[in-house]
Every structure is written in structure tokens, then in C-alpha cells.
Length: 277
Length: 277
Image (cartoon, rainbow over all chains, first blue to last red; front, side, top):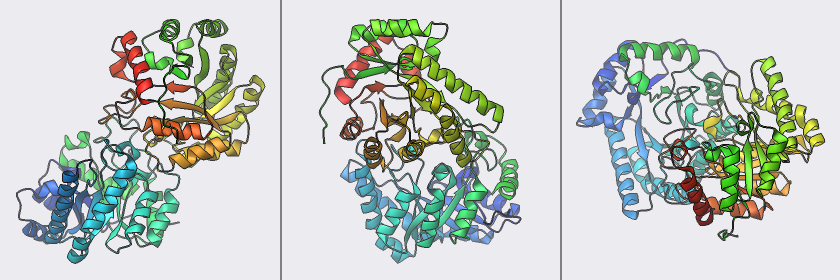
């Protein structure tokens, strides 16, 4: 089992939301000067920008545009909202294409007003509806299983087993899975399901951060790698044994870090990446 | 599938922590006059009391003492703490015996300083260590799988599948499982695992409350039945089809409800039990 540390930054990607106080332009400049090689763009960071030019700007900084975050949110008791969501996912595919990335991460959604099984069916139907556009644009869709504490409103897909099931049922080279340690670290089946995900060529993305004890907020109190109890390096070894050798994406929502000086924070991210990823 | 509503209170049990502002004496008097037939006693409610006399007091109010909450918390990186925990579980068994209940609910524990697999082994070893005393006292131990959001410090047993695995490995009529809808509602394998739990005679307790959207606090913002998205009645039908016909236990931690008038709250619990359980 490979559990070597990573000594260079060639596989380090940072999500724009991780350094939310910065605009995408400032993020790109600072990531680049820090030696970071990848960026995942949250759609809100593109507001008011020419998307094609923004993609060029990122590449001019030497950054690979790893993915666009996020599509999904397919389920609703309201048919009109489901249709609007499918339209929005089509727009996300266009945006990804313009930005020059070949991957969209899907936070699949859930509606607390209906059973989880119904939401799961609507997720499957929603992805199926937009898959032709994704294929035409050369953009892959990564189902991200979310922690069960988000099953009410954010995702009815809460284990890697479920995400694997759905990706396999979609049976398209343009549908796969994103593995995020924050959502999945507790799962006793994680190692097996990562192996399965890789074997079926469905492992499209790998996100990291840490789980703090205590966690003060269900959404915005994620930890920097090393601050919590997630065995990040062990999970990375599983992901790599499953054949994944793409970017390792740092995705941290943190009211605490967003309040701090972002340049100092970026240095902490880089140090923590080398020490704990 | 039985999804009939419950029209009488003969199976309603309330946990003392649900009405935390009340002493156990006040809880017992009010539960009893409200027609509630069961009580689950949290150990803190027994502080400073003669336990045997408290048990008699409860029975004199016509209350069945359904279980003692809670044993467990076996894992630790510190061997002395693990030994202290085993001693504490032995005391809990004595207390259950004195109180006159034949069931202890186990919140199994976890230590964020060690891998989940190690915590799981220590849980198995801890339960094994106290099982002889449990058998001698005629007290059963119910492994309660806890929501994955508590995997860092409260329980390394986070699915009913894991609890079933452990109960079956312990292979004793004095080791089983407690099913709590709050912890398990999201699990796609829930129906199957409840059936398995019943088939192996391991289904010892059934706890209810609801999951609110949004949930403001990870510990103390549980909802009253009907306030959230948990399909309580559907899960009850699975539990009953699996052969369970014991008490339905209302266990709600809620800063909101604890601040309210507890008599009015008790009436709400009874109404919600009839309408949504």
C-alpha cells in the first residue's frame, strides 16, 4: 500500500470556495505564485465574467481547470423546479465547456417533502436527461455522494456504494463519481467501494479536507488536513491503488478560515497538503 | 405492510432526557397522568437517588422501565480509560438490575485519535468483557448504531449493518441492537437490515423523533415526530414486520423544547405520537 507523502505540488488543486474572500482572479494569481497547479471553479466565482476569457486567464497562470462545481439538485416535489434544474444543469455543461474543463461535480440534491427513494429516482432521471449534452460537450459528470447529515436537502446519495450503483446504471463514460473524504471517511465499506469505483473506470475526482472534533457547524466548519480524524493519506492510497492519479482537490468550507488572512491561509494549505495528504 | 396509526398509548415510552428540565419524579408523575406507559431512564436522572426505590416509584406510577440509558463509550487510546469504561459499564449493569429494567442502551463510543477499526475492535472487546455480568444480572445490552456525524467521538458503529454484524459476532441472547430512526433513516439498506435484525432476534429497542430541515445543532436540535422528513411510520412498519412489538421510545434532545413549558410539551409529544408514530 502506497502511503508515501507528496513532496511537490503538481497534483494540488484548490477549490475557489476554499478561499472564498478572494475573487477568482486573485485566487488564480496567488495559487499560481504559490506553486499550485490546479483550480476547481465554483460557479458563483464566474458571476459577471466572460467564462471563456476566465478559462484563458486561469490557463495563463499555469493552472489546470480541474472541474466546475457544481451541478445537480435534481429532486423536487415540484415538476417545474425539476425541469428548471435540468435546464440549469445544461447551462452548467455549457459553462464547463466554455471554461475549458471536462468535469462537473454533481451535488445531486434531495427534497425533504418526499421519500429518499423518489429523490433518488429523480436524480437518475435528471442525470440521464442531460447526459447527451454532456457527451456532446465532452464534459463528464461526477456524482458526489454526500455525508448522511445532508440527506434531507442536499443529496439523497449518501454512500459511495449508492454513487457506484448509479454510475454503473447510467453506463456512460461521461458519468462517474467524485470521492470526498469529508463525506465518506466513516463508511466501513469505503475501501471496497473505492476499489469498485476504480475498477469500473468511474473514479473521476478526489476531494480532501478534515473532520474536526468537535465540529461547530454542519456546513462551514471543515478542517484543514491534519486538524481532524480523517485518515486522508490512507484513503488516498486506496484511491491511487484503484488507478486514480489525478489532482487532489482541497475543498474547505470554513467560517473560521474565511475570516483569516487568505495569503497566510494559502500557505497553511500548502504545508498541510505536503504533511497530511 | 402495516402502516396503521396507533390510537392508544400502551406502547408509548418517553426518555427522561426528552423532558430534561423535570426531575425523574416529576417526569414519572406527569408521564403517568398523561397515560404514558413506559419510561427510559437516563443515568444522570438517578443522581443522588436510591436506585431500587426509584424503580419502585416508577412502577407505582404504572410505568414500565423500558431501559437504562446509557452504557458504552468503550474506545480510547488510553488503556486506563478503556478499563475505567468497562468498570463503568459494570456499574450500569448493576444500576439496571437495581432499577428493575432488563435493557441497557449502548452508545458505543469512538476516539478520534485512533482509526475507526481500532475503536470498533475495542467496542467488541468491551462488550465481551461485561457480557458475563449482563447475563448474570438478566440485563440485555443493545448496541445503538449512531449517525455517521457522530463517528468521531460518540460511536464507531454507524450503520445497522455494523450493529447487526457485531451483535451476531457476540452471539449471546444478552447482546442485541437498538434502532433509532434519527440515526438510521438515510440508510438505503435500512429495511433489509431491520429484517435481518429481527430474524436474528437482535431487535431490542425502537427509538423515534424527527430530522428537521434545517437542523441548527448537531446534538440538540432533534424534532418532534412530524416536524421533519423521517418516514417514522414506514420504519415502524418494518420494525413490526421484523417481529418487534415492544415500546416505541420518544428520545428528543432539543434546546428549543427544553426551554418550553414541559407540560404543554408532553401534550405535544402524545399528540405527535398518535399522529406520526
